[in-house]
Length: 143
Image (cartoon, rainbow, N blue to C red; front, side):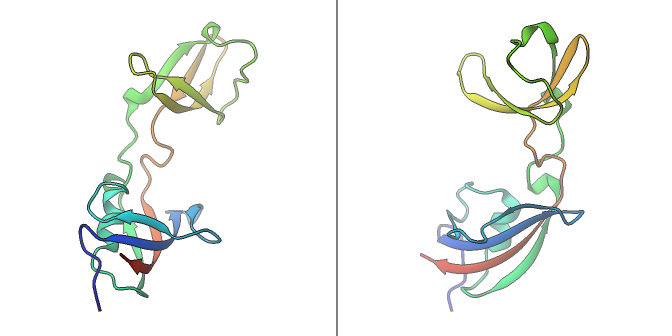
């Protein structure tokens, strides 16, 4: 039987959990994830975990944060003067806002990390930065 290798387009069902068992994503009830192995479409650890699997194989992989979304980057914690926010934007810890990157205009999601009387700290790290991830995988197709 064919083993999944770099360049193959694969179909994978998955369930992703954090170290404490909290579910963060799953393909359950949806179409399987389709991506090309070795193309950089998914995080390195996920790509590596699927490589070598055969259709019908199931396995659990653990991906350290360095092979996932990396460590939390303190340079992506941005301190803003609270007066820079319009009054109609709710400033509550945990809320996701969209910022526009200077120069490119690219939209960057940020999470409100801290709200104080005079400042607001926004976190532009990926929500899974600093997290080790576990995935239950099932390879359902190779094209």
